[in-house]
Length: 357
Image (cartoon, rainbow, N blue to C red):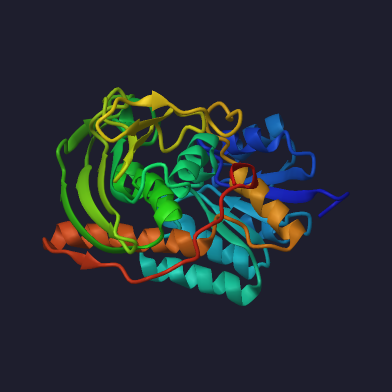
């Protein structure tokens, strides 16, 4: 911390780095110290716009005493190594999702952070959004009665239609890349999962990038799973990299004994929220406060900074992220082996945002 400001460094300066840097700007107690990327020009472009310096190496970044928290925005498979390197250097970490590609790696990171006395948080954190908090408040207040079924839809389109480097996303698959969003919201609202049953398939194997380069995928681009939560709620999760965002099946539906709730997006903080008593039509629900227009990507980083200052746990934890990784791995194992797979880990769910109590 310098001049009373918490120093943030970004590692990995691809597409998502600018939204993170942009949403940090309004917070005067936080400062972007610098950035590092394997392609130096990307880090240079980021700091030219948002401030700070370009680091020549991870070692240089981690040796800088001005860096308190590292935001890890590297590609999926690099997450565990980068997080461990930062924790071992004494830095708090917020990472993009998923925390790791196996539960064992994810759990080891949680244990390392605890051993070092450091904070570890992970995306997705969209349950912190105004629309999502509104939905959770209605559920907590019993508006729906007991929620027994939830439908979560992730029709995320064809990555090659907009991303310059789509292959890493297809290597990971829609489940690990974007299935994490509704799973994190649902485990926040209802607690841990206990069993999954799933089906996966490659429905569109041969693709072409915007530049006309053909590529072939082998990780299922279509996965459907039934996730049984410990509290009794049953979730049907659909994830794919084929059906576009134009699909009428989107967001999350919560169905309870007294009624149903529709959350129009698991990502957009300003998403519509609608309630219907059983057998009645949906009506809009006002949000608990004026929403951020879109996704405030750095909200969990800011919340972590405040939690450190106030001496309390942050809401986005490595333990929940690791539990979600275990669910993802169980789904993958289920569709590979053709059988139900148990989920065993636990975590302490986050508390609602203060303004949504």
